[in-house]
Image 1 (spheres, one colour):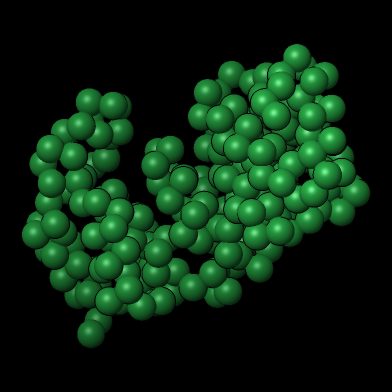
Image 2: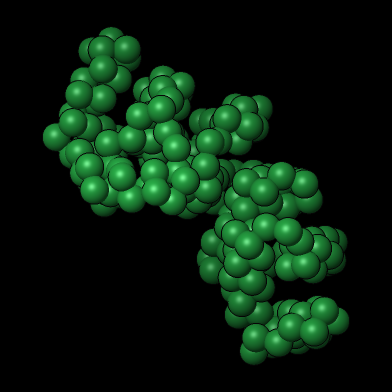
Length: 204
């Protein structure tokens, strides 16, 4: 089937998944999309597993200014095929915190260059880039990926900046990453405690 036809068919299928109450609740919270059917994440996951991984389809889905299309794009994009430049374009075009979080969990944490992107975005002054950076590192730490010495120093520096920064979403994501960082082992726990103590925070 032609990719554009497939996208059209997928969009039509969203009508059946429509949840007006969820869509209205999102609008009430300030989540504005050109089109939002209010489909749940489990429903979209099911749809993604039916479709399978498909680079060209993911690219077309992302172009649509529809909440469900963007989330589905992050689910069907093969992580090993998407180039860093395309990831940067997607990041620039990310319209909301929800899409940023879905992209981090469904796609960005699985990139072959995930850590590199995380450090790049963590040092950004943009809220959604910082958010994705810390979400990716949280997942990498959960998977027991230990940073090298330079990575540790950079992470601690950016963590402290984020925890004292202006964005509540980033502060929360940064704190989650600190908890996962500390779970890498006793040395990491001591480093995290010491760093947080320097800004009068104690969560352990």
